[in-house]
Figure (spheres, rainbow, N blue to C red):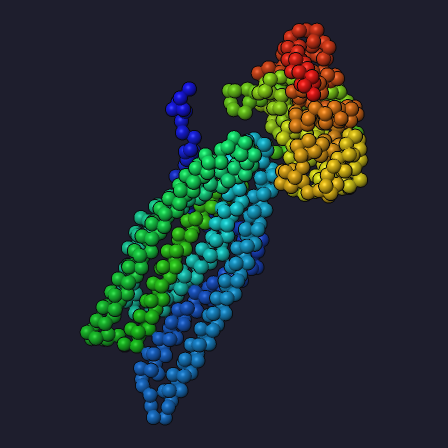
Amino acid sequence: MSNAAFPPMVRVVRDPEADAEAKQRPLSMALVRRLWALMKPHTRKRNLLTVLVVLRSMQLPALAWAIGAVINGPITRGTQADGGQFFAIVMGAVGVLILAAITQVTFIYRQRLALELGESVVHDLRGQVYEHLQQMPMQYYAKTKTGRIISRITSDCDSVRVGVQDVLFVSMVQAGQMVGAALVMAWYDLPLLAVVVAMSPVMWLIGRVMRSRLSKAYREVQESFSRVTATIAESVAVIRVTQALAREDVNADLFRELTSDHAQYNMNTVRAGGQLMPLLELTGQVSMGLVLVVGAYRAIVVADPMPVGDLIQFWFLVGLFFSPIQVLGNQYNQALAAMAGAERVFRLLDTPPAWTDVDNACELPPGVRGDLSVENVTFAYEPGRPVLRDISFSAPAGSMIALVGETGSGKSTLTNMIARYYLPDSGIVKIDGYDIRQLTSKSLAHVVSVVPQQNYLFTGTVGENIIAGRDGATADDAIAALRSLDCEWLIDDLPEGLNTQAGSRGGRVSLGQRQLICFARAVVANPRILILDEATSAVDTMTEVRIQHALERLLESRTSIVVAHRLSTIKSADQILVFDHGQIIERGSHDELLDQSGTYATLYERFVSQSIPQSRSR
């Protein structure tokens, strides 16, 4: 077959959700108010910082006025023989230096408090995001990219930090400085102030025109970064598969294209921001030129001339009025990024879980037997495409139910219903007669334990992973669990015994050892209902035989739901359910199903035929 029949594998895939977000308006007073509300737990620090901001914004015009007053006063009047004016100049200079020193002290503490407040807010916000993510059901994670979630709690929260500690309070200082300078200029000369204010609509128009460009540019940068992050997370997670398929070059080409795409968005942002600042600065310079011309006319030509000293002071204040423009322009650029990040974080926080514990949720009483009942359960991941269709069966306490069927027939989905990872679209799952919808999540987790197909170990020691199944468990419980599985030999096989580091995702232990550790963790949890989803798929045949008897002892006093391709592990099941396209097509014991000569019998014959050559080869 020609390779031309396939589309190129290296391409940048745009995220429809990201494209939809890019069309929304990122900057709004609602977001600003919500950012302000984030500081409520730190009200004292916020209020003190606000006072320092006001002082700082008033001190700068006062400093400019003081310098102008010294020039307009003793320096303008000249030096007298007795030295009185010289002394006045010195005292004025000392006063200016003292005011400047106080201004700098205010600046130091304002900056320090802003940094502390920004860090405190982001600390709280990340905690809220993390707690919210813990409450989201599996349905959310199945639909959301890992990179997008990581970006919310990292780069987007960092954008909020910048918005709080830099944009908000720096902008308040600069805006206050402009207001303070305008008030003093109004006291000196209203007509000249009118010249300054007349340029404000021009600046407003420039900002309005550039706003849409910068908004789109910053949003595209954020979303592009999310795509890069998602690719990195995926590449690290499946590095073994990548190397096994020799896809390093292909993935590297894809990543280079993504980073090139991200760099282009950054360049667009720089271009848009680079146009805004020169335009604002040019407007300020034109305004100062007009003030100079009009002020000179008022000081020289008119009948009631303006004192030259007042013109000098006014000139200092005009510079102070326009100097924040460049700073505010930079802050505006950062504000767009901060608002974009804040909008994403708040959207996540405002996204309610698909379901939570009901208001009157109860806990299972002590002495749970483990009777399981599934009644007419139907479920679809996507509307109109049911994965389970009207599933019903009962599992008395202590019984073993085996789920058999081709891949994709709905076996694992059913175990997700029992563990309440998902809620059925219709039907009921009951434990000891209690509808699991009416139970608290914590109560259900104590009763139902899952050993998943993908054996996950947390970063930490092997012992810590085993006792993670129950609060308060000790190393003795871990050893007892391994002993009950007849796997105490595992401790000797590990380099440092239970203190052996499992590594990220259990990468420092073998696949079989990882499986046994997960079994032991389930033993420590001591559930009444145990779900084994392809639980022996990662264990070699010899290891499986070694632990089969231990598993039988483990399951004797528990209700167990076993999903397995290796039919040898379920021959002793009390009931076997055969699935096909989301329906139960056969049910019964191993012998009963063989006698029916149906689907199960065909699967078992295939299993036997595949097992015999393997045993002979050994």
